[in-house]
Length: 257
Image (cartoon, helix red, strand yellow):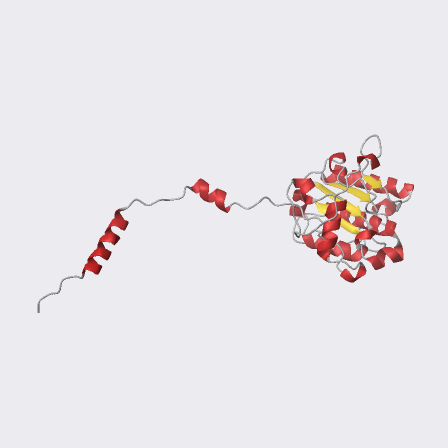
């Protein structure tokens, strides 16, 4: 049997394979790979705990998030990085003239929801919380569009250790939060959702008043921040009478606990 010659097509294919095998390979430097795969920096989640019942206000969750971002601290203003749905939003408000003169106040009520005595009590609680834990809780009670809005960013020196609590019934759920990155690492996101669902619903603040919603929310945040780190941290929303231990109006302030 006479052996057959390889066809021209097979020889040319074999030659091409040899050339390809001998050609130097091009590799991507590790630094380039790292830059290509690096994630964008994590940003605080604004309006994470907005109303869970769209029927209350006739708007979608996305619209409420847009309104909160426009009327208070947008993520773009906090970290220069826009978040949230891409749709038309109301123009952001920036009214530094609505800020009180003198040293920054931790609790601002430009809507008249709180009594002077309650403002003083909440201010003391917030200051003690910052002194004991290092976390800054700042409270802004507003009625959009009457709000200092973006001006509070510099006024309060908002950073990664800051939680800005915006109380605005016009957003459906009165409890809305902008959570700093370091706080977000310690406090589970579900805490803000449960807190909003307990004290922030339209039914709750209409039955008990805006002051009760704000005061109980501050109390619950105070208690949460003081708990030991771990899986059980901030698993229970506290604040009202009978839910010991509580660090708010019905807790240590009254009973010395």
